[in-house]
Image 1: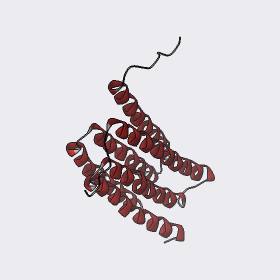
Image 2: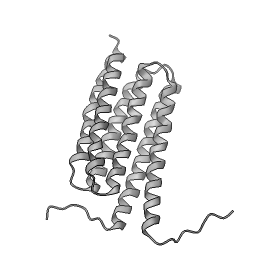
Image 3: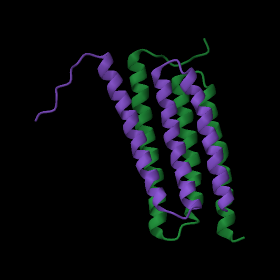
Image 4: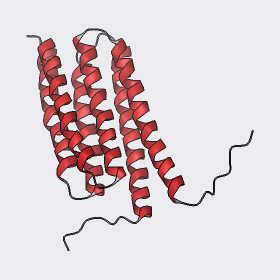
Length: 100
Length: 95
């Protein structure tokens, strides 16, 4: 097994717990704002690991650049959307969950 | 390697299926929109893996477009519901 296949396999397997953690957080967290955290941080990190793993399998620099730009676009879009959704929720009157 | 890509794609599909639980339960419409956001990010990962498995890198271009569509749909949701709630202060776009 070539070394880049091994690295790709390790990185792809490492991304799986991040996706599962993101979905689990979406289901189990008590509040909208906490769910936004789980979604934009854990899932995007899992996607970053998938992209890094696939970069080792690419045939040309063109493909590497395309993978990297896809991931950066998802990051920026996720951050913007999370900010807008949270601001709208605050304007609607929702307050963050607290233990009291 | 192809079995690894396909197996991971199937597991990510099951993850999306789990995320549907939030669509059922979510107390507000915003929670349901968060599930759509989950679909977008996970679908980009699935498309990239499938593109690698089938050695057809055109599918990876589709992943890029999917990321854009997710962002646009979430922006449309925020825009629509804040116009419905608040006063209609928007001027229509000039011709």
